[in-house]
Length: 127
Image (cartoon, rainbow, N blue to C red; front, side, top):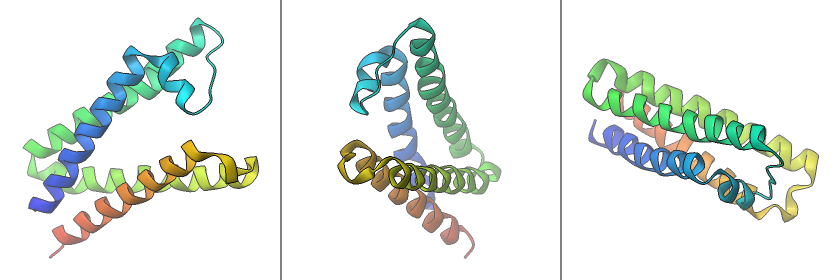
């Protein structure tokens, strides 16, 4: 159970940091991936989706740390979300010519590692 809680703590820290960064500095964060936010609606979208969604997920994971009945569902959520992100990113790299997309290759690595750690932690709870 310690490993599972450690995985959640790492995810809470990462998601909180990235969520705040996207909420506070959306233009700068979007530029890391080469995105250019062309209007106020685009800036609000990045704040809400990339900032708000990550902060909300971090809040749910923090709640799961305090309630034992939410530990397994939180890990399942992480496995599913990161696996879906990784699969979508692989498809995007293939469709969009990914050999030169350094940002996306690093993001893919992060997603695969995060899904793997969450899966490993989930399996450890079964014992």
